[in-house]
Image (cartoon, rainbow, N blue to C red; front, side):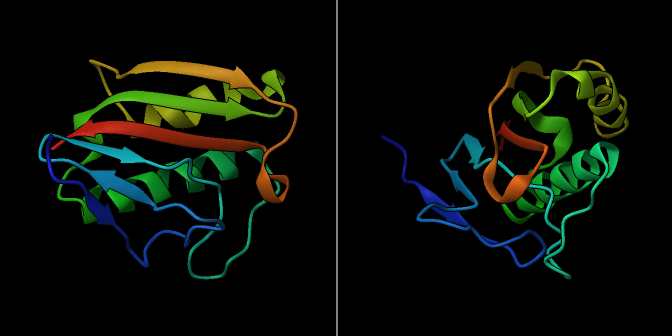
Length: 126
C-alpha cells in the first residue's frame, strides 16, 4: 500500500471536524468535501454561483498544495441542497473544468454543514 500524506493549506478553510482537507497517495489525491467558505474571511456567500465558485476555489487550492491541479481531476462529487441549483452550478463548474471533463456524480441532500447550499469533493491524479 502507498504511503498516505495529509494535505493542508491555509488557502482553503480548515476542517470543521475530525478529518483532513485531503489525503494523498503516490498516485492520487482525495479531497474532503469543500464548503463555500472563504478562507480569508471565514464567510460564506449567499448565492449558489458564488458558493460553487468558493467551493471549487478551495478544491483548487488544496490540489495545488498537493502538487497537482484541476486539469488532473478524474472524479468529482457535487452535493446540492436544492437540485434547482443544478444549472447554475454547472455554469460555474464549466468555468473551472474543460474537456475532457472529469467523471461526476451529483446528489441532492437534505442539508449541508453550516447551512451551505453546495459542497464539492474530488479525486485527482498526481
